[in-house]
Structure formats: structure tokens, C-alpha cells
Image (tube, rainbow, N blue to C red):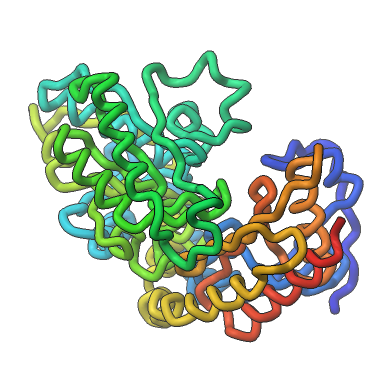
Length: 441
């Protein structure tokens, strides 16, 4: 137990994805972290059940990552990525490409998952233009999809609350596949549900409606996460791949959440055995230590851009903080930790334990579904009449008071622990969740 920290002035900060007024009345402030635990401003330890925000795959403040960032800050703090470079950026790109499936062997670094998605969309449109098919500008997303908060990301995304204020200024011509969540057919599935692969065939209807010659790419999360963890039905991603191949569409997997061991493989593409043309990454790339994202592309896409005079810029896109030295140092160190501590294999070993613990909540008061894949899990609650999302938020607050941090997505409680979690900590999370769910109204 550490001494309580004096509260700062909470007024000026506009907090993201937060009920600001409620929070500032009852603040939940975290002042330090180590391994699987946060310390609160009033000196309590809280077990982190969500890896920060799907991102601290190696746990908090891993000494090797911290030291790499500290050393880099004292040696090279910043260098522009425009017409200049530094060795660590090239090293990290090579390391990521080595982990990626098949011929996805070039990486464009950005600063977040949102930037990665918007970058991937631009790359896809430009690729078709370079091939002489500049009319391919339409994107197909999916209902309940989350692809960040840039205008491109909310356009292809399918989460209503993120879109409704901005409908008049989103990308034109975007269409959406139906989501795959159906409690009647796949409630309490363990891993990928058996029902729902046929929903991928809706892509054929959308292609027929718009004509394949107008469509640049299909973008889906390999496992939708922010909407409440929806593992893809068995065979679903394979059908999407086949339809994209049939009509010349690029297939983009948003792996901002699922990359770097979350589903057991390097990427979910390998877990499910389906190779996309483009993968977006972030979060686990640096284990959350420094903001960074990226876009991993197939060799043929990169090669299509490498035409024209050698002195000409091939892709007019980038960010001030692309390839940032501190981020690349964190990324290299994180990949070292994943390899040296064999954390992806650890995640695979713990996945059945995690699954059993979560599904043990079936039958609890209010619980209407439990879902899991790898170290991603969700417990869906029946909404309180006339008060959607409130019951789940009550569970979040109750768990926090009992020393466990969870996340909510609507009326679903989401769990995505770091790959370093122990079996006893998995049990602690599940039992805390059980006790709180049983007591909320």
C-alpha cells in the first residue's frame, strides 16, 4: 500500500470515450503499473484484465522495453521520416515482416491503429489506380466493425455511436456486410462458432449491387473486439478470401487488436489460416509503451508503387512521427521480449484455462452469452430495461472496487489480459466478475 496521491484539477481534460461528468464525480486514477497490476491514486493494487487497452501484451513496464526506450531517448530523440531514416526503423520493419504471413513483406509505420486504417485505405485505392483501375474507390466494411476514429475508419466501421454525428462527411460509396453475432445460433460458443459462415456470401450480393469494378477493398477485423469480441464463424474468413479473389478485391485484416499473440499466432491471419493482402497493426507492436501503428502489405502492392523515376516520391502520405525513434526502440524490444519469453506460446497454453474460467460464468444472473478466442473474452449481460449499457458499467465499477480492471462494450464485459497472466490471476478475474455480476441490479 502506497500513500494516497493528491488529486489534480480534473476540469480541463476532455476524456476520450468516457462519460466525463460521471468520471469526474468518482474518478478512477491510476498512478503506476508493474507486470499485471496497476496502482490507484489511493494506493490500491488493481489486476489489469484488459492489457491496458488490448495493448500491453508483455505486461506493464517490462524492464527490457523500458530500458530500450530510456537508452534511445538519450541517443536519438527524433528524426524526420521524410527523405531521412534511422537504423531502428528498418530493423523493426524487417522483424514485423518476418512475423507476417506469406508475401506480406513491407511495412509502413504510423502512430496508431486509426492512422493505420486510413493509411491502408489510401494504399488500396492507389494500388488499383496504378494498375489502371482508378474507378475502384469503394470500400466494404462490416456492421459492428471498429476501425478507429479517423474519417476513413468510421466510414468503413459499423459502430453506430461512432458514426451517427458524422454521417454527412464520411467517405462516399461505402457498404457494409452484416455482422455475425446471433445469440439464437451461436451463444456460448467456444472459439469460432459453427454457425454463420454463410453470412460471408452477402459479399456476393454487395458486389452485384455495386459492380466489382468499383470496389477497391473489403476491410474486416479478424476478430471484432471493440464491439464485444465476436470470433469469426468457422469458414467465414475463408469465404471472404475466395470472393475477394474471384472479383479482384483486396482483403484487409484489421489486426490492431489481434496482432502479436492475442489469438495464439503472430497474427490472427495465421491462427485462422487465411492470408489477407494488407494487415493493419498497432497496440501490441510496442506492448503499448510508445504509440505506434503500421500497415503490412503484400509484395505485389509495394512493387506496384515502385514505378516511375527513382527520384520521385511514390506515395504522398506520412506523419511527422512516422518511424519515431522511441517507438521503434520500444517495438524492437517488445518483439525481443515476445520471442525470448515465448509469450505467444504462453498465450496459446493459457487460452483453454481462460476459456474454462469464462464459460464457468454461464448461468450467472444476467449473463446471456460468453465468447472467447485466444486471450480474448466477453461476457454479455442482459441490458437493464430502458437503460442500455448501465448494467455493464455498474459491473466495471464494482470490479474496480474489488481490485480487477475490466472493460465494457455496450452491455458486454470484455477481458483481454496480458500474455504474462497466471492461471491464478485468470481465476481471480473470473471469480471477481462472478461476485459482482451476481450483486448488481
